[in-house]
Structure formats: structure tokens, C-alpha cells
Length: 347
Length: 291
Image (cartoon, rainbow over the protein chains, first blue to last red):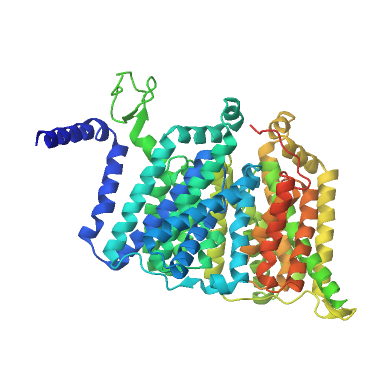
């Protein structure tokens, strides 16, 4: 009993001293609560469907950020990982009869393999060359899909895959819990030693090499990790939609993920996730003006970029928080002195 | 024999199209470091412009071509000033701003003309027979016009002051600025030139293809493959790379089974293989790390 009380007290003090002092952390807690409690308030299958897809694409967008945002290896063919994950999960499920909880991670491992295969040649390229080369890979794969329709289903894709779970609400819980888990893992990775090296590679690769770090290995690691998470998203998508088709490999898919990530702000992980949760439902609700839907979407992205070229969420965060000039700890914008070292904060 | 002629003609036509597009894309990348993914969207807009001029307003096709090229170049300048110039320093933002721009054009066009397939009649109708193969006059015109424009562009780049300014900005922006070249103005003029090229390509190609709002997607990919294959910013590379990929595509379409599906993938595989051997492309110079 005492032990439980102790942990409760500890939890309370953590919340009081670590979470409630910063608005961005409060927002993260609210986001977790929102995602987990949504089915309590509404069981509308259409709404849940939108949020399931949103969660899947949130994993996808965050995985792009992990690779391209953090290490600066602009990947324009991220749909490759998604498609490979989706196709291999579907094939494993259909031919080997592996249930979803097995086929999705196995599909993600195949996507890791894809990450290795395109990562190794791409290590020699940088910048725009890399971006334009990676764009080619999903198109090559799509050509192969069309050329061998017996195995891949060709234009129609692979259908008849088993359901994720039996009901819409449990589907929602599986996807959203996996999303929260994977995104937390990604965020932890970027916060770890590895993540710092990723970030340093983005800033100045030569300097990182001079510091004795094998950057090649880290870049490959980034390709593999990103491939794994994107493959998970692809597998979830295939099992939820019960189809894996060439649409998963399309160029527009790769472009959309780049739009989401840069719109939300790169090198953050939370930025792309937030952007997907903002833009994807927005796109669905714009269905009222069917013809103007994509136009509105593009215009919104253009206008927001004009004012916040670094992305929406870093801009918002800078509005509500400021960094202490002495100890580099973030404070709420209302404070005049730093909450740790009591240094004067600049206005 | 007929097959060979067919392959040569298809290769030359698609090669010239890719070359015109890729040279425009290379120009703006070289002079302003802008990866303009909306480049082929301008080509699409120009094609629609010509459709309106000739089919709806009854103008002569040649006038239609000239007016369309000028109008689209102006459109390019306006969108550059409004959307690209303010965020030029943010590489990622420029990328998605240009994608969004292309999407805007695509959506506006599909609102105005719906998604149906349209076509424009050839400048000169008819064909002649060369060794048993029909060669349309329009194909000949397209090829000749492409060569003519490329020669003209070469002259502009090599013989005029603007060309000199453009080439020096492409080599080193900061030093060019120090030499008294107004770098921002050069960038803007290059944008006009490059969009004008894209519009011209649309103008000469439109009778050979079908108009639809998504017609910019495929050329965009091929154009980027050409540019990467030839070396970014190298005009000679773009030119040669375009014909390599054009002929590769034509060979695959005519010779391989399921060729039309494999056309794009084979061209892109060639690009990947070349990049594995020469990471800076065929004629690219490997830049020192840019600051």
C-alpha cells in the first residue's frame, strides 16, 4: 500500500515538476489522452477510419523524418519502404498464412532489407543527387509489379488479406497504440547517442568523420531504422485496407510524406506526426468541396510555408516557449527568469 | 528495318523533349540552386494554353505557341516572386513549395477543363513514308524546333552578357555577387528563361501527346533522371543524357515484352547504374562541399 502511494506521489511530482512547467509537454500528454480516449466519445466508423489512417501515416511521416530530417539524407522515394512493407506483409499473409501480428513485423524486416539494398549504393551520393536517385527506386519496383502480374496482382494489387482485428474499435486501438509506441521509440532514438550522431551528420558530415565516427555505418543504420518503421506502417495499412496495391508505391505517396514532414518541421519527430494529424483529417473534411479539395490543400501548404519556412510546429513552439540563454533549458514564454538557473530571459 | 526507323524516330522525339525540359531544369538549378519540381507543370499549363488559343479562340497555331510561351513565362516569374523567392534559402521548403505549386496548377487545370483527355491538331498535317515507316511532319517539326531552340540557347549562354552572368552565378554565387552581378536578378531572369523553355517544349510536343491534368508527372520523373544522369547543372550532360534515356525507352518499348510498363524502370535503372560508377553523373563536376 505504501509502495503504491509512494509511486503515486512520485508520478504526481514528475507531472508537477516536469510536465506542467512546459506547454509543449502538456500538449503531448493531451495528445496521448486524445488518441487513447477517442473511441470512448465516438464510435462513428467513418471517423475512426480516418484516425486509423492518420495514425498509420503518422508513423510513416515520422520515419521519413528519422532518416531525411535527422541525417539529412533527402529520401524522395520513401514510398518504397511503405510499399515493400505492405506487399510483403500481404504476400506472407496470403501464401504462408501468417496472422497479422507476425506478418507485419516480418514485412517490416523485408523493408529493412530494402533499406540496406538502396542504402548501400546511395551512400556515395549526397544532396540533390541522392534525392533524385531515391525517387527512382519505387518507380522501378512499380514497373516490376506491373511486369509480373501473376505474383504481385499487377494493377489490381493483392486483395483478400485477413483483417487486423475483428472490429473497428479494436482496429483503432491496435493501430493507435502501435503508433504511440513506435513514435515514442523513434523519439527516444533521436534523443539517444545515436540520434545525436545522426543530427551531427546532417550538420557537418566531415566534422563527424574527423571526430572518429564511422558515418557510413550510421547512415546505413538510419536507412534500416527508417525502413523498419515505414515498413510497419505499410504492413498496418495493408492489413487495415485489406489490399496492397501499386498505389502504395506511387510518386505522389513519396511526395505527400515529404510535404507532411517539412510542413510540420523536420528534425523534430513530433513535427511530422502533428502535421499528419492536422492535414490528413483536414483533407478528409474538405470533402465537402470535392473539386476544390486538393487545391485548398496545396494552397494551405504554400501559404503556411511562406510565413513559416521551418515548419509549423517549431514556429509554434518558439512562440510559447523560450530558451534560457545561460543553461539552454526551455521555459514557458510568460516567465521572466529561467526556472532552473534564474537567469534573466530575453524578451 | 522499319523497326529500326521506328526506334530512331521515337528515341529522337522523346530525347529532344527530355533534353529541352532537362536543360531548363538544369539552368535554374545551376543559377539559383532551386530544384524546381513544378518545371513540367509549366509545360502542362502551356499545352493547355495552346489548346485554348487554337480550339476555343481560333488563333493560328504559331501565334498560339508564341503567346502561350510568353504567358507561361510570365506566370513562372509571378509564381517565383510570390512563392519561391521569399523562401529561397530553405532548401526543403522550396522543394515542397514547388510540389504544391505543381499541384495547384494541376487542380486548376482539372477544374477548368475537367479530367477528360483533349488533343490539339498538328501544325502541318500529313506524313511522308521513309523506308516503309510513316513519319509525321509534326514529328519532324518537333525535332527541328528542339534543335533550333537548343542552338539558340547555346548562343545566348556563350555569346551574351546575360549568358556570362548566368554561367558565373552557376559556378559560384558569392563570387559572382562580388563581381557586381546582381545575383537575385540573374536568378529571376533564369527562372523566366527556364519556364519559357518548358512552355516551348509543351508547345511543340502538344500535338503528339494527349492533354490531361496529370501529364506533368511522367516527364518530371524522366527529366530528373536525365538531369542526374548527365550531372546536375551540366547542360552538355543534360543533352546527352536525354538522348541516352530517350533511346533506351524507345528500345524497351519496341523490343521487350510488356515494354510500355518497363520503359520508365529501365531508364531509371540505367541512371542508377551510371550513378554507382560515377556518383556525380556523366559530365558533372564533383563540387567541393558547398557552404
